[in-house]
Length: 106
Image (cartoon, rainbow, N blue to C red):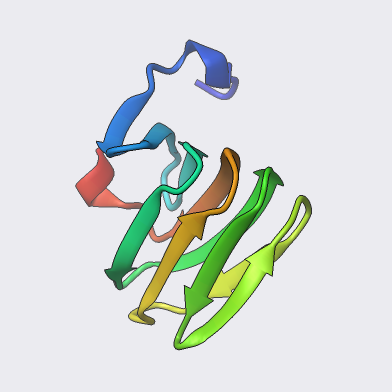
């Protein structure tokens, strides 16, 4: 199916205060996250390359030990196997693109 309406995809609560709408293509996964203010994403890593694009709100992201405050339009690239974590400063929405596909999110 080449066309998808994001709002037609049911949200999944992945962590408390963290919901996701997930789209899978043949070789990548897109995750539209919504975070409640104060939601913490614990440090983790995965073999997937990740690009995070802040769509709304403010979010603090730590990648490989470097912390930055993200605002609308900020983009972060996260190499595979790099530890990263985050915290929603306000209500926030992020679009993450993963390559290759996130089998664990199917």
